[in-house]
Length: 469
Image (cartoon, rainbow, N blue to C red; front, side, top):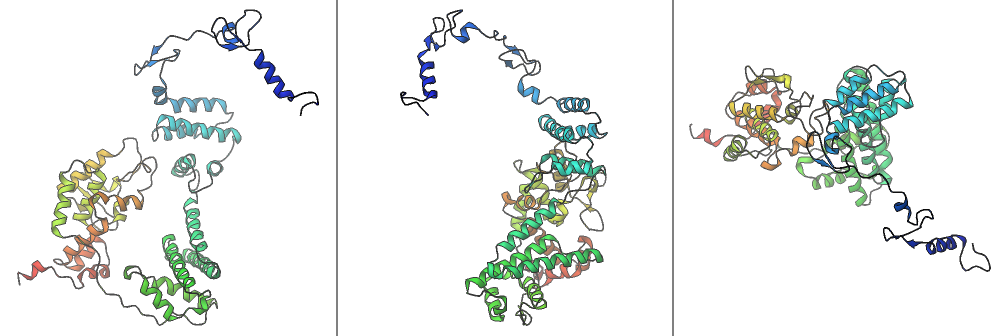
């Protein structure tokens, strides 16, 4: 606001007066407000302390400008004593510190860099100052952050507390699975969505009853796959003007299955859903009851010829540019027919260095390793990070600080540089054995069922064996 006789408001008048009061300092030559006592500007009238001379870092010798510090910032961040010093200060600050606090400092110091370990101890200290007498389970719940990740501090506390029996593990995996199910249900068109939501609740109830009865409950991946199959079917129905499950008949299902690839036909999932819909009185007739899809028996997956197998064997045995994990996984799948599950859960305790054998999955006997595979295993163990406490052989950047196995996507894409997969190598090995060995011997050796091995015998004959007849 401005007065009637004024052209500017009070703020603009003050700015104009201050700008008019600026003068050039006779000492430094810059514009400023001159002091009456010295006739100079403020910085010249009250100069700060003189800069300290440059000094060298006591550890790396790097020159530190500004002086005063014994260590440069890089060396100070790398000091191994930092998390322990922070823990000592935290113990002194708290009136009643928990008896596991120093063990937690040791836990994070041996698994993380000093900077990250110090930050974790500081974050834990902030929680303890808010609630000094909180139980470990309460601290674990308070440390969690909303979202798809519970946070670094919550992950470390969960690993630390569960290993010592101080708290129960979090339900993060169940929350992630619930989020995946919700996204699949929300992707169903609105007219068909209520039935799919009821189907989801029914599958969860069935799993709960199976757990109480001690039988085999459905895994989260199975439920996700069933919901994804019904989601795709519902999108197909809405695209053809069908907005009610009662309008679905056998011809519509056959039309939908004809568009799906033969390898991924979701007939089992559709039958499960329509049986539920008929029990729930959503439909009168099950359109999949009399539906029969003829699938060829036997193994029809992808395999590698022997020339390609020799190329891969040479690559993983002689090349120095191949990652140690890739060489170990490739040779184990190519020579010993190891599956992805067996490789993910292979631990250091399963290795016998004296006899050069390893235990894989449910195989009844230890597997003797050939010299090439043993050399790859030795190189992989040398490649492991020295500070990790993970008991698994294959350790990644994300699992080096915990005790969980490597993720499935990591194993799935580990052999991408060689343009192959673990399942292809395993199938090639099993198919070669099926042409020359007894199926009962193969099933016993690999811990497989007889039906799983017989699939490799259907319509499969090695042409090189026919030449000897």
